[in-house]
Image (cartoon, rainbow, N blue to C red):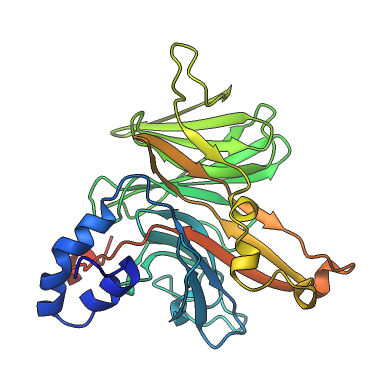
Length: 309
């Protein structure tokens, strides 16, 4: 069984309780492998719920995930996705928000879904997000930032167990478009990186919420080792378009928007930025718009009592 790859083990574990137990040791060994490269999940609303999953070696699998229809991924961490779904055109109920737009956690390999209470916004406008740990933990916090205008950001924060979001308007000091959101596990702070090496930090302590602005550098001035790693062009650097079979001339009208993720690399936090890759088409509005997310291949079997916040 230890010769099986992660995707085979994930499939094996999902068959039944006995198989899940039998494969748990081998699966845990793979899932705990240090410096594991993230996989890429591509989804397209016009694909009959079929998504393409690309492993770190470039091997492709097809997954049927109707749960991703109409969604935008805001964050990816530890194999969980934080998804936003806009209210339907005819006002149909979405998630648990009674017809309003919704946010929920989703684990693609186990198909586990955890709804969040009362989405605080109805549509996206440069929203970026991060969450501190697996949503099954009572320590989990979700932090969402969006730009109100050139001079103001809006903070949305939710802790597990809360019924309402904490929201606050924050004057921003020269912060440009935010391209990455992550949680610094060693500092226990949310980091929001813009594309000009400016940083917005949110920190919490019980019922207190604070923030600060600064410039950042991954280099630690007190030693030779970096404080953390960043990958600003991971989609391009991994040649993912070619791995997906979309690098040929007939696919020049394809554009991508990707959601980054975070992992450990050499014991340090490593952050993958969100990316927007335009098509080569002259008319961008006519190009095929695809969405993708970097994800850690991890399987969660969540008890029903843990599927609510």
